[in-house]
Length: 359
Image (tube, rainbow, N blue to C red; front, side, top):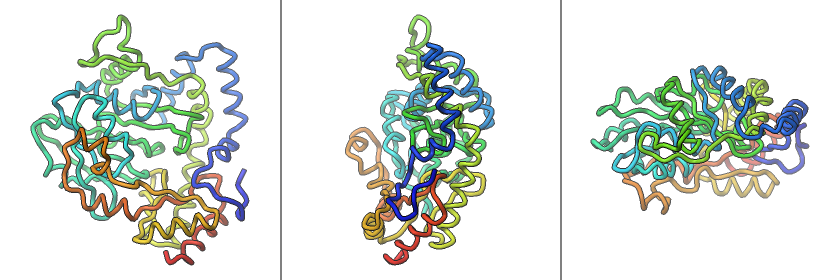
């Protein structure tokens, strides 16, 4: 079901996306409700195995959010008070707040000159003996540049919340954190997340931390566990939608390339084989373009209004590095409508408004 090209256009449309798999999704949810197995159970285990197989890793652990996948993954590595974790300045708040929630200190560094991705040179410049991990963010589905071997036994952790569909999503990391928030490419009907890894011991520790520490509620890697389970209803929704993922990815890519053909390299389309999550364009006139779209009944969004090193809640807990490129990107980034229920005609309408507004 596609919205009419002349009506209001949403940047994402979860209801329209649900229509593509409605019968299978609703049948799967009914089966869970009728089973009475609403926490854990076979549906969650089946989804975890399906995610691991789809994304080319050995283990998947369902959790209640992508944020908790980061928090519990860091804790399972034994990262906590006294440790530092390097994160890029352009990302959602949770990339840095997860480090704080794990008890460590985020070190916020700048991004590349041409893309909003972690700059390896900035990582090297910010290094200290306290750094235990580096978190490249697969922002908008874009592939972070390689970091190579890290000193002092530090590890790479992939924030792949916006990269469901990439194979493998783990990249250089020891684990990848996925989000299934309703606007994501692989979307639940509420909150949900997963941690993907090839490390069996790490998966077991994360699973225990997400169940209050496991039997007898022990400390795990020095941390107290919490309740962070992916519920069975959300697992059923995701399992029903997983077979449609490739079609969904292909459609979003086709629309993104249509935007790029009309608007040029200002539109940030991920590399081939990578998911188009948020479709962002960069323009020094981003605010004016957003207003023009709004006036035409087209929803657009700013990603992100300010970089992480300017967020007061992060500044209070972080070690901050100069991030001029991140600040410039946040001032110029605009997210455009791009989802698998969108028509080519709707894309052309968005493009026409942008071009008339001087994009």
